[in-house]
Length: 123
Image 1 (spheres, rainbow, N blue to C red):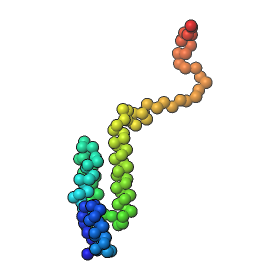
Image 2: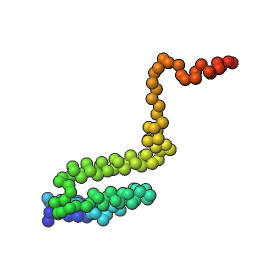
Image 3: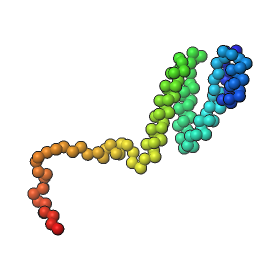
Image 4: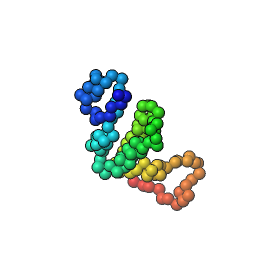
């Protein structure tokens, strides 16, 4: 036996490690989405499912990921992007609106146009 695929039950994983030394363990692709959806807002389920399916799609038996670090980088990047989108979605004003509203002040010694027409304020 070289690979066992199961849910992440700790007792099951301990039994696999104790009785099948040297065997690799992999999380079941059926249980993983259920756990992910349990912590995802329901409105985001379609997007998260699409992302997850793109992670699992493999062109051949060699697989998409050459090693564990590669999948951690990919999944980490996708989750970081999703976190940014969720944080952005909760803002009253989006970042692009705030960026457009920034004013760049250019120092000048010339009077403003029409400044001589303004009346002085008096108390």
